[in-house]
Image (cartoon, rainbow, N blue to C red; front, side, top):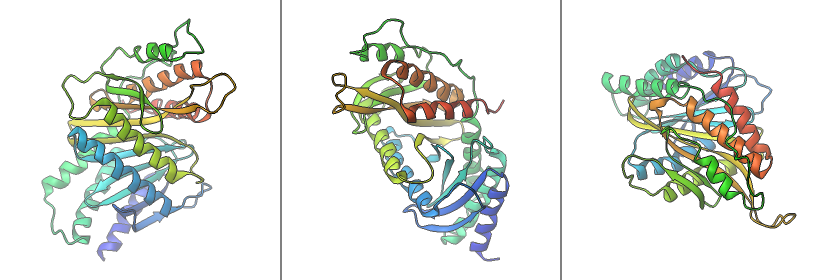
Length: 332
């Protein structure tokens, strides 16, 4: 069996592990496809667009991790209306799994980590890197397994509103500040609201030690990655971009996440004047020490609370529904 055939074999094992997995594709860091395997689906999926999205997301977010001095990026989750992209960097390639999370969620971390172990081994041969040590293979697959488990673990936070009883609708920022201050625990290291150009409107820094990049710089970088993925996915059959989560860390015991999702549209002008209405995104930096479930459920509450003040917005409301799917399917 050739190395390429062996790669296809491992991609097939990932595809067969879940009927909700629609496509598994391996590409280089520039998005050039190396191998792929798919099953028939009612959802129209363009493999070239998937590899382009994977490349865009990883390249931009990796810069943020470098600025934070937290490395290496392990896995990312990109949630759209209909599917989720799970992208894992293996050597100098990106493995992307296109998965219908409404049909089944989450993926089996043990099964996927096992496939990752052998894929990394084969990719070493494919690129002429020689044998990869057993220790390196185990360390990498364990890190992927931990990231997949931890993002779906933790204590769910009750679905509630933090909207204050009294607020001035013509000046919503004080009420939004009250909402942001309602997060009392230290599950977030940093979190902020940012417009598409990267300008931070409000933010909170709860890091216990000084980080090498300011919260403004961190927020702007995270927004760039999200906006780039939005542009890449426009007019696709995947639907609206609802949430992007990137996981990084030096080992399975020290993993961190960045999450970006839409938080509605804020009006900066007089009633009826649409000339100055801006989208806002929620950005968060967190440790996976507490698991991903409290992070996602807390963001759901914050965005729900903000929408009660600034008005309904289709994409942010879709994120809330997606958050409900994710948080009710957790690992014990």
